[in-house]
Amino acid sequence: MKIKIDERTYEGSGMEILDQLRLASFDPIEFPDAESYLWQLRSNFIRATDLDCALPDSGLERQARAMFALLAKAGAMEVLDDG
Image (cartoon, rainbow, N blue to C red):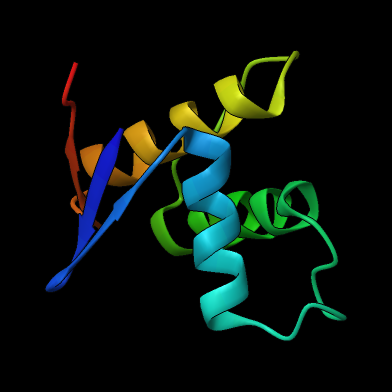
């Protein structure tokens, strides 16, 4: 998976990209893992867009991919599927 935010492209699995974004933007103490960051991102998305943000019940990878798809749909980033 590839995601382009502004001029930077992130590559990896959904979970790896989520972790790259977390580490680049926050103190690891604030969000100690990708899952805590995902739920904060989800909460911010709901507040900012007033849209529903249902994520799959299982698997952080599936949840991260679903979150990125919702962000792309809202125009927050470009998701480039390379395979």
